[in-house]
Length: 429
Ligand code: SAJ
Image (cartoon, rainbow, N blue to C red; front, side):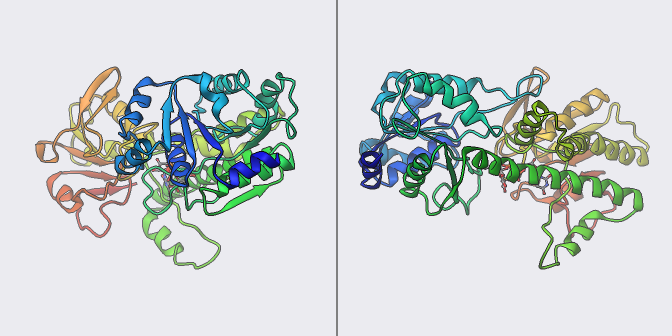
C-alpha cells in the first residue's frame, strides 16, 4: 500500500478511467490537469478517436482544455482493455440505467469489472463511481475481483465514490465539488481519498462502500421526493384556486428550514428519475417498500397528464377541441439551457398531444431534432405562426417569453417562465 500511496502523492501513478462520458471524461481531464498520466478507456472507437484528436464531445469539457493534455501526453484514450494492467488506479464511470422492467441494469458495471478482474495486478486501486444500489461494490464487484486469489486491502484495493457531475453547471465542476469516498477496508479508503485529493479540493471519507453508495442515493432521492411533493402542492393549489408559484416564492423568504423546489411537467434527466429506483429495488429484495420513492414516482409521472388537462381546458375555453388544434411545445430538453432530452417529460407531452389528435410541433434552440414515435422531428422557428396553443415545457433563458405571450392565443406555462408578464391568455400549472 505504501508504495502505491507514494506514487499517488507524487502523482507518478498511472490513473485509469473506464467510461469516457459526461462523468469519466471530465474526471480524466481533471487528473491529467493535476499532472497524472491518464489512460482513458472506452468501448467507443469514435470517442477514442475524438479524444486522440483533442476534440471534446462533452459539453462541460472544452476542446481547448482537452487538446493540450492529449498533445502533452498527459491524457491518452484507448479501446484496448488489455492496457488496464498499465494503470495503478482505475475509476469505473460506466452507465447504470434501468432495464425495460425498471430494474437496475448492471450489465455495464459487470462488463467493466470483468475487464478489470482479467488484468488485475498487485497494488492496483479500483474505484466504482457509477450510481448504484447499496451493496453493489461488495456483493457484485468484490467477488469478481477476488477470483484472482488476491486479498482486498492487502494485495489490491477497492472503494466506491459517487459521481456528482451536474452537466451544464457553470459554478460546480469536478474540481470544486466535494468527493465522497468509502473503501472496503481502511487502507482502501485511505488510498481512494489520497487519489481524489490530488485533483479535487475536498474529499469526504466515509466508513464503508455502502455508506458512500447510499450518500448519492440520498442526494437524488431527496430531490425526487421534494419535486414530487411540490408537484402535488401545485395540484392542490389548482383545486384551491391559489397560484402555487406565488406561494413558493413567499415560502422561500423563510431564511431557515425551507428549500424551494418548483412544479414542472414531470421528472427528466438520467439521474433523478432513475437513481431512487435503484434504492427502492434493493429494499424490495429486503422485503421493505420504499413508500416515499414510489409515491414521488407516481406523482411525478402523472404530471404530463396534468399538463395535458391544462391544454384541454384552455383550448376548450377558446371553443377549440384538442383534436385538430395546432400546438407548439417550447423547450424539450429535460432542464433549462442544456441539450439533453433523456427522460424529458416534454417527450411524454408531445406523445399525449399526438394521441389526442393535435397537430404538434416543437421549438428548442438546443435540440435541432429529436426522435419521437419512430419519427424524426425538427425544431421549428418560433415565428412559424398559426398555432392555437403553445406549451412551455422547458424555460431556456435565451427565449423571449414576452414575445411568446404576445404571439399565441393560449400559452400553457409549466415553468413560470412568463413570471411578471401580463396576459389573459396564459395558463400556469
Ligand atoms: N425539476 C423540477 N423541479 C425542481 C427541480 C428539478 O421539476 O425544483 C426537474 C427538472 O426540470 C428535471 C428533473 O427534475 O427534469 C431533474 O432536475 P435536476 O435539477 O435534479 O437536474 P439533474 O437531473 O441534472 O440532476 C443533477 C444531479 N447531479 C448528480 O446526480 C451528480 C443532482 O444530484 C443535482 O442536484 C442536480 O443535477 C442539480 O442540482 O442541478
